[in-house]
Every structure is written in structure tokens, then in C-alpha cells.
Amino acid sequence: MKNFKIKTGILTVGLLLSTISCERYLDINDNPNQPAIEWVTPNELLPVGITKCYSAQGRSLMAFSSVMMNSLAGNSLSFGAPYIDDYKPNVSNTWYTGIWDGLFLGAANFEQIIKYNDPEGKYVQYKAIAKIMKANYIQILTDLYGDMPYSEAFQQQNNLTPKYDKGENIYKASITDLEDAIALIDSHAGEAPTSADIVFKGNMDNWKAFANTLKLRYLLRMSNIPSGDLATFRDQKLATLSGATFINQNVVENPGYSAANDSQQNPFTNYFVLTTALSRPQNYSYNVASENIQIILNGNSEGDARPVYQKFNGIVDGRRARMFNLVGGKVVGIRQGNLPGEPGVPTGGTLSRFNYGITIGGTSTPTSNAELLSMVSSRPGYIMSLAESKFLQAEAALRYPSLFSNAQGNFTAGITASFTLLGSTTGTLLPTYLAAITSKVGLGWTGSDANKMEAIMTQKWIALTGVNPEQSYFDYTKTGFPVTLSSTIASNPKPNRLIYPLSEYIANANNVPAISNTDVFSKNQYTPFWARN
Image 1 (spheres, one colour):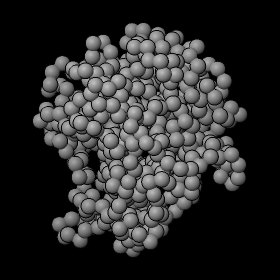
Image 2 (spheres, rainbow, N blue to C red; image 1 turned 90 degrees about the vertical axis):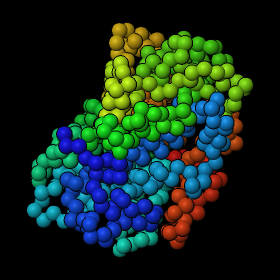
Image 3 (cartoon, one colour; image 1 turned 90 degrees about the horizontal axis):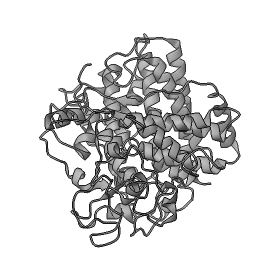
Image 4 (cartoon, one colour; image 1 turned 60 degrees about the vertical axis):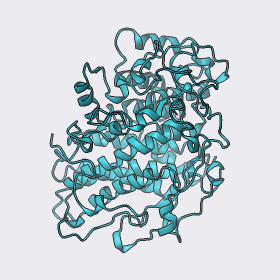
């Protein structure tokens, strides 16, 4: 595979090297030593957008959603009062701005591909891929922020203050993009993507299946809308997916990540795990397993009496040793918000952190520092896991049994896919776990439909820990599952959305909604439209 430069983007163009101002979603530099963006071809732009978006997803978004979903905690044994803004939470216009900036900057590459002047139709398949990837990351943005610039975004100097579109209209436009992408794929027009496709290596059937799966994710996010035009739209579009082919593998990107230098590593790795100098980044020391996930993965071995943990009693999760390193044979974490000497904070010693199932994937276990560095550096970036695809299909069949089938089979397949991704399928780990949860309401496939929905969301949360936890954050906002405790110092509930970055209030002041800290915790006109009910 061709290795692309990664750190500031694959191409040295103003699009990537300029510091993003929120109104300049596609900022072009006139430096004569850099090519004008209109001269950069889709096969060069495509891996730029994919890696740029994944960098934000695997760093800032990973940290935010891991803490919100109580799988990671700040190491209060070493860092005083860590994650205090996350624990409260204190949501502001300077909080996690890397998510907005990174995803918008990456999405600008996809838009440039879509608009690229291609009279001979050479890049039709590239445009299809760009529409799919843009839809994937635009959904994350609008699920986090609600209304945002869309129809007037990415227009360079032609519009430096784009208007804000309603989230529901962005959803409709993105679903149209996915449908258009499938039509372009089915046309078989243009050249087949080769090395520039750092996801499926030009396999357009896989791109089509991924588009269907994203469309399903969009429509299921709207499942709580009870009636009206949006509900009708959702139901009509769901019907078009009955019998569709959904992605049946992990969707990963890898432009040639390696241990050559920090800029060539998977960005998740040198943020959370290890640099090429074999030193630990600060986030490795800062982020440890939470007490919440400790109790769940250990089967509540310490007998915690809080009701949320009773369904896990006696069920040791066979994935735990691959998800987090074990200390004394168990996952050891910290209760979010508590300090040394308070409940849920160990008296000292080693704490559990992400282990090889998450930092490498599969069954690999390095035997030397050199092997460790090579394996964690070349880890692919997870855009969507097979486990998520299966859990989406299970949810669809449970909610809409006239359109979709095999809810229980897909539920079990989601758990199995998670065990496989983490390398936890050896011996009897998987069958033992599946047998143990059979009769556990809210954890296995038993009880009422509401119990089964809780089980889907709980198992999906475990499966997406360290992979794509933001999707579980959105599930929690939509369903209230999995039941997730807040930190001991929380003065607010978990936010329904984030606040636009400060740069928007400076540069696009006439258009950006004035969101207050109170607004993010309320159900109001600023809440993402699918979460208002």
C-alpha cells in the first residue's frame, strides 16, 4: 500500500496547513509553492479527509465520549482533580473544540471531491466515497451540535459567514447523499479507486453496504419521533432498507501507519498509548479505567450494592483482559470525581488502562518493546465496527419487525464481533459469556422489548469502548441506556449537546445560535431534533 504523509494531512495544501477559523471551513492559501485546491485531484484529497476526520474521532471525540459514558476516569492518584469540567460537566465554548475543528476541516476535503470539475467522469467512484464519508462525519457533528453550517459551508471566500441549517434538514440531505452515492456506485462509471481508498481498497460493494448501514444509523437515531412529516420520512426511508445488504466487517482506515515517526503513527496511539520514542504521552497517565467499567467487567466481584450493577453479578466478562490490563487478576479503576482516600479510589499501585485488544486489536500480544511499538503504531483507525453494524440491525429488527428480522441473531453476532475484534475468542470465553447472560434481564436477550433494548444498548456500549464510544453517547441521549452513573461531583446531568466553539461566536456571530450552558442540559429548540422527545 502506498504510504501517505499523515501528521498535517497527506497533501501540503492550504486546506490542511491553515489554522481553521470557524467561518473559513475551506481556507485556501495563495502560497505559490502550494497547489491551489482546485488543482488537487480527488485521489489526493480522499485520504486527507479520511485521516483528518479519524484523527479528531480517535483523540478528542474518544476522550470526551469515554468519560461521558463512564468507561474512563482521570487518574486522581497522580493528577489532583482531573477531568473536573467533564465531571461537573462545565460545558463552554472552549470545551473540546478539536472535535468541531477537526471534523469540519476533514469534511471540507470530501466536499471538494464532490464539487470537483470532472467532465469526463473519471472520478465518479471517488465522489461516491466522498458522499458516504461526509455523511458519516456530518452526522456526528449535527448529533453533537444540532443546527450547524451545511448548505453554505465549504464555499471558501465566496461565503465566510455561512448560515446555520436545521439538523433535520441536514439529516435529510445526508440521507440523500448516501442514496446518491449508491446510485453512483451502481453506475460503475469512472476509474476504480486504488491506493487512495485507504478503507476498502476500491471494493465498491463494501462501500455500498457501508452506505446502507450509515443510512440505517441515521434513521434509527430518529426512532423516538412519534409523528409528523419527519416520522413519515423516516418510515418511508426505512422501508427502502428492508432486505438491504449491510456492512459485514470492521470499517477501518489505514494510510500506512507505522512507527517511522510520531506523524506516521495512528493518531490514537500517540495520544493515548505510546510515542515512537517509546515514551508514554500524558494521556496514558491521565486516563485509566473507571470504577464503573471495573465493576461491570469484573462481574461485580466486590459486591457493590448499587442497583445499576446487580445484573452483572457473577458475570466476568471474557473481554476484560484484552480491553484493560488486569491488576491482581482484575480490572482496577477509579470512581469518577473521587480523590485518594475516598470510596472507589485504590490506595495505590497499578491502575488498569487500555490493553492490547483496544490498542492493537485481534489476538496479538507483543513480546518486546520494539514489537509493541510496531503493533500499536500501525493499528488501523476504526470508523465503524462490525459489532456496531450488528447491533444497529438488532435494534432495527426489534423496533420495526415488519421490515427487518433476526433481532436476537444480530444481537448475538454483535457480541461475537466484539469478542473477535478484541481477540477474546480463545477457549470458552465467548460461549461461557453468552450462556451466562442468557437469563439476565437488560444484559441478555430476555424479558420485554424494553428489556431487550436495554440489553442492545448495554452490550453495544461495552463493545464500542475504546473503539467508537461516541455512538453509545448518542444512544444514551436517545434511549437513556445503558444506565450510566454520573461522577460524584456532578452538578449537572449529562449534556444533550455541545456548545459551538468560541471561534464561531467571533467570526460568524450573526448566524451562530447563542447557546447557554443551561441550554445544553435542557430539552429545547437547541437540542438535536431527534432527542427532543
